[in-house]
Image (cartoon, rainbow, N blue to C red):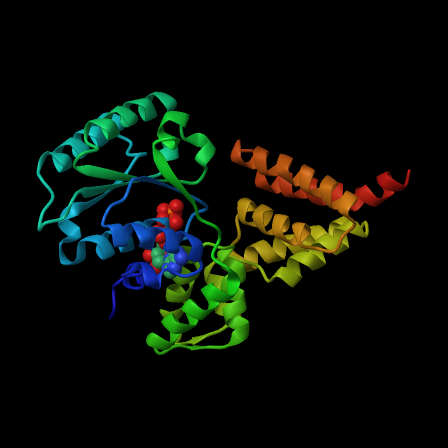
Amino acid sequence: METEIWVEKYRPKTLDEVVGQDEIIQRLKSYVKQKNIPHLLFAGPPGTGKTATAIALARDLFGEVWRENFIEMNASDERGIDVVRHKIKEFARTAPIGGAPFKIIFLDEADALTADAQAALRRTMEMYSKVCRFILSCNYVSRIIEPIQSRCAVFKFKPVPKEAMKKRLKEIAENEGLEIDDEALEVLIYISGGDFRKAINALQGAAALDKRITPEILYQITATARPEELRKIIDTALKGNYLQAKDMLENLMAEYGMSGEDVVSQLFREIMYSNLDEKLKVVLIDKLGEIDFRLTEGASELIQLNAYLAFLSTIQKRRGE
Ligand SMILES: Nc1ncnc2c1ncn2[C@@H]1O[C@H](COP(=O)(O)OP(=O)(O)OP(=O)(O)O)[C@@H](O)[C@H]1O
């Protein structure tokens, strides 16, 4: 039985294999041509290819000796910035190997560092800039202190466009000998919410059960409800049928094994992309934001979700008053 994780197996090996980030890849290729890079800052949502691009860049720059000249670290290492700095020091102590002009330090989740830790990191970056280039990865550029931002070339990663993701997933499925139709591919895209890692993991999870990938299996293993089922619950509640909506939601959560947070994030998507009146949408999303916050603070999901359904079922009346 295969044990390899597909997100690793299908990680792009060259910049050309990174999909849906064309502008970024163009700019990086010009660095490869010059055989030099400045410090880089990769920002964007999870699973859009920041780590994959950093590795592909190192491979394109260094060829066979990329592993010896590339290190990946997580800035949010719970042992703190000092451990990270120590590792950087160790790595930077020896000269680049196999004729590489410099080494690359890839630091994931750089925005998890406090401003003080980032200031320390900035000094480290300066200290080793002759032998090392840093690639910092983060979700939000705004969480990186200005002195670091200004020393880096900034690259903003966008969610991978649907068609590009679909094409790649189809290739992976074919390579694994899976049977997958267009409907199931669309479901994978929906489940992923733009996160490539999620899509590939869902595909691998489903493939472990059956070579024929169906929407049902995908929804089941990812604790995702069919969008139309959630829309039905929203409509029922909006029509004032609170009790009916409550029963429907309870059944749905039990059937798919959904947590309160799963429900909230799917409700968000369904309301956001629904054709409800814009003003109503704003009110519903605002309230959902409140519920989301309370859940993260540890409130009871049963009470919070019921409170939301109760809110939906009385909103039309209140707006009419
Ligand atoms: N643009 C892409 N092209 C091809 N494959 C991709 C792309 N983005 C992600 N992938 C696939 O998804 C996996 C996870 O992506 P990656 O680790 O690069 O995401 P990331 O942006 O660094 O996410 P995080 O912020 O969570 O670290 C990769 O190993 C690869 O298989």
